[in-house]
Every structure is written in structure tokens, then in C-alpha cells.
Length: 318
Image 1 (cartoon, one colour):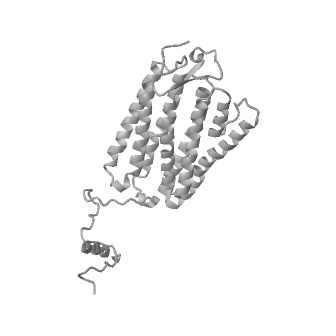
Image 2 (tube, rainbow, N blue to C red):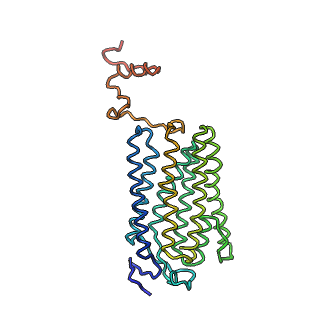
Image 3 (cartoon, rainbow, N blue to C red):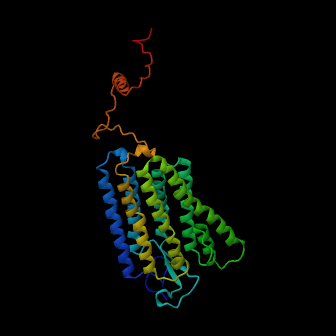
């Protein structure tokens, strides 16, 4: 049964050299994309670089994860729930890359945050939605690491998908209910609240929010399908799993980031309610910090703001 693939445990249902090569390919694209976002940020004032930094971070984290998977690291073997006769998935111990979920745990909230920040949603709504994304990823990981039909309960909590569960007791129903609330809350926030708030910010912002909200939500609905036929149902081989997840990650990370930055190329972030102050005098175009009280008063007068009265000193006190 063993095949020589060992990483504390042994698996007989794992990626091949072709799967590893694909992981390296995605790692390379993520790395180049991260450098691209960072280089492009230098053409923007520091106060306008938030989305460049976030997208670069997403791609860097993804590159590290794909580096690990391409190196055949960051995985464990889990006994499959269903044995298959197909020679490509006949093994009873399937290779599960938990490092993929570490990637998603960090990057998925950053992607959601960019969408909601662009739409101008209130901070409490953004924070709560980010927590829901963590619920999605954590339960996907737990489900992948479980052999029994309980994994479908975890899967329900993640994506509200109950059709393949074999449990008939109340556990499945509870997971389904929690999953429906979590998943539909995220979808509702992105597709309805996000678009409603973006409409106030202008047609250009609404256009990019519409494109990316629909784009991201549709692609995210494919992830649970891939999960169900790979880690969940052991139907497709790990190489096919690698290709499927890799394509989805490329579309929802570097492609998402490129479209977002292109769409906001003429939009000042202050329009979105994102205010960043940069008083570093070494930055071209940034205001020089006042050195004396008189300089501060002069700067305040220039901006039409009355400078605060100075505290009496021994020289000026009466």
C-alpha cells in the first residue's frame, strides 16, 4: 500500500510529478504577481497603495502555500470514506494538503475586505463578514481531515450543501442551518449590501464592485464542488484536485487584484472613506511636518483652520 510518499504518515493516494509541477507553476505565477503589485505601487502615493499592499500580501501567502505543496510538504493522510475502483483514486489513504487551508484562512478575508472596502461598507459589517469567512475556511479544513460522514456536517457548515450526507440524525440538520446562515450572510453582504453602498460612491465604483462581486461569488461556489469530489468524496485524483484549486486560486487572487486595481486607477481612496495621512517629508509631494509653533500656525492659516491657542509660558504669561 505504501508508495514512498511519507511526511510523518504514509499515503497511497497522492499527487504525482505532474501535480507537483503544476503546484510549482502556480507558485511562480503568484510570486510574479506579488512583485507586480509591489512594483506598481511605487507609481502611486503611499496614501493610495492600500489595495496594492493587500493584493501583494494575498499573492505572497499563496506563493508560500504552493511552494510547500509543490515540495510535497504541508500535508497529512486521511483514510477515505469511500473506496473507489478507479486506479487513480483506489488508495485508502488520501493526501490532504492542510497548508492550502492556512493559505485560505489568511487570504480569503483579505479578498473579502477589499470588496467591502471598495463598496464603502461600515467597519462593523466588514469585521463580522470577515469572521464568517474564517468560519467557512476552518470548517472546510475540519471536514477534509475527518474520515466519517461527519465531514459532510462540516461541509454543510461551510457551504450549506447537504445532498451528499449520509447522516439522518439532527447533527446534519444543525450543521446545515449554521452553514446556510454563514454562507448566505457573506453572499448577501457582498452582492446586496456591497452594491447598494457602492451605488452612492459613483458609477465607476459601482461598476467595479458589480464585476468583482459577481465574479468572486460565482467562483467561490465552485470551491465546494471541487471539495466534494476530492477531499470529500474521493472521486477525482489529487492531480485533478491540484489543477482545479490552482485555476480557481489564480482567478480569485492575482486576476481579482489586477481587475480591482485597474478599475480603481482613477479613484482616490478617500472617496471610499479610506483616509491615510502621510507626513513623511522624504515622500515626493507629501507635506513637510511643521518644525515650530509658528510653522504650525502658518500651515493652519493656509488651510483655513484656526490654530489652537498656545499654553502660556513664563515669557508670555501675564
